[in-house]
Length: 183
Image (cartoon, rainbow, N blue to C red; front, side, top):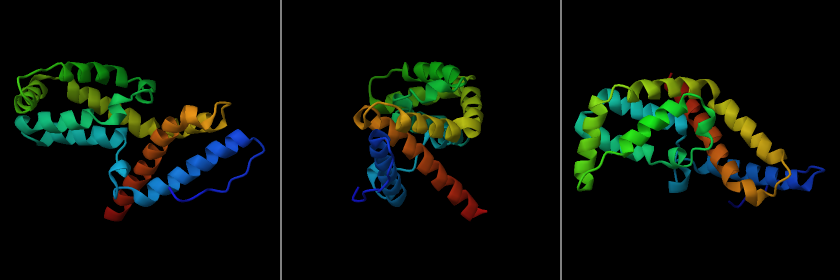
């Protein structure tokens, strides 16, 4: 992150956090998809990928794909997601999905694929969550980001959250731009 954003504010703490945000936003937007740490993902894109796998892949392949998407840090570090009411039902389904066990990794993916085929509430929970994310994810990310930038805590207390939220905002802008190009 070579840039240093020049942002001034009477409150030096806000100035420091806002400069960090601006620098990280520029870095992430410039490098999105070109470095491992700048993968273009967010909770909505992952949910869309899971729904796609559930509706198009054979049950044998589903377990592997869904496992990978659910293991993404957006689902592991889910403080942001907990603010969405439909996430409660989905989180229960994820917990059940993760409770499926097997002797080895290949068998685990097969067993999870079979679980996905039998389970009738996982896909509706994902679809409800997708609708809520489409309606509220960007606003919630922006509101949370503003809260962290303007609060009285030092940057190091909220740095990871600022990065997390910035990734959501930039990746969604990236996806929206791609959809416009395809139209």
